[in-house]
Amino acid sequence: MFTSKSTVGPRSTRAIVARKSVYLTSIAASLLMAATIGVGFTSRVTGQDSGARVKPVFTGQLPNVPGKSLTAVVVTYGPGGKSAKHRHAGSVFAYVLSGAIRSQNSATGPAKVYKAGESFFEPSGSEHLISENASETEPANLLAVFVADTGAQLTTFGK
Image (tube, rainbow, N blue to C red; front, side, top):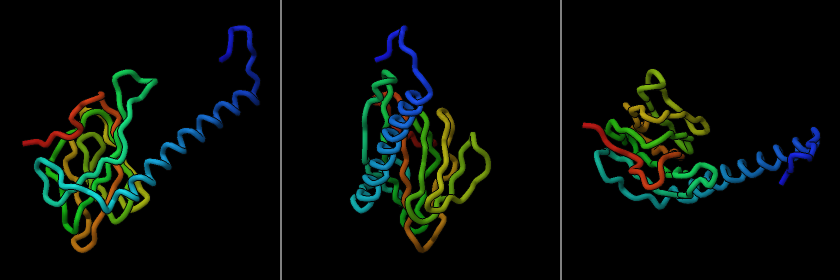
């Protein structure tokens, strides 16, 4: 812990930033690895969907943001699978693990196809208008990472 009398030089600051970067990278790599391992063990989503399965892979409270949690899930779409319009609690970062996902969000512009290795963001309060597998013949998987109120229902389907 630093006191008001300590002086932090450029080397110390770089070391602190480097440690934080390694820590955050480790968390992201762990989530991605857990998601990749968990892809084969998905379960059917409750609600309005046509071919989407969701597998929770991580949940934890954010100690530096009281009342908020980080939750990661793997969403699997079979060939031609899709989800109905829906909203998410909080913000969502999505990373396509395999295949291609067509997505459109009310806050981020027209529909776009995201391929394996690409990502997108859904701001809090927005509506996910299109979420589907872009292929009629191959499955697709994505890792969705939510930052939302602890205990919140993460997905609410529209009418």
